[in-house]
Image (cartoon, one colour):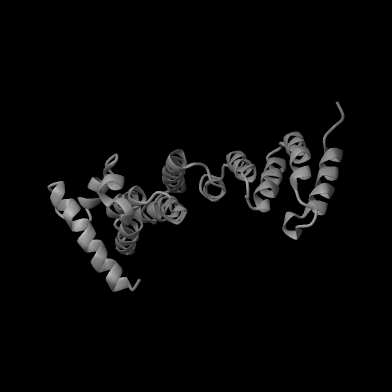
Amino acid sequence: MAPWLLLAGGGALLSPLGGRLGIQDSEASLPVALAGQGVAPAVLGGFRAMAADVLWLRTNLAWERRDAAATEALLRATVAADGRAVYFRLNGARMLAYDFPAWRTPPDAPAAVRARHAAGHAERALAFLDEGMASHGPDADSFIEMARICQQQPGDLPRAAGYYRQAAELPGAPYFAGRLHVELLVRTGGVREARDWLRGWLPRLPADDPAAERARMAARLAELEQMVPAP
């Protein structure tokens, strides 16, 4: 569908919603209405995907203005309209984790203040992804994004390792999630735990899929066996 048709259709779809709820169709008020419990599914019905696309366009316009309040409100409205789309959740979490602290922290702020702001926004992003999985079921992409946020913002490697494990244990997860779980455990002193988990995971790796790197992981298990002292 052409962008102008999408916008026109979205406007026609969303404007009656604002009138029905007694609000103006604006970036400040419409997301609040859409994010209400049960409102989006009941009112939007089969048009949820189109409404989410329109709201995502508005989210990006607010993001370009660095309007954190409008960006977050529109982001949550987008997910409320069609929370099944993992794309919206992943990119929204990145906005919350990386863009918001950059916008809200003065460039001359002390390092401790910057770190505190980054950690706080990282927690908001993790909660945002967690809420999505609570509503729509776990998915490997969300767990991997949570692991990356933990690595890059607060630098919480044990927590990141846990999220990589949760991703790796889901059907169809990319194999690198399991490899990163093992290596982060080793880096943080959990060699025995890494060895034990890899023992259980290795038999699940297909020998005929190069992406699984089964031979390399078997060699890595042998190394870990040597690193763990005998009881």
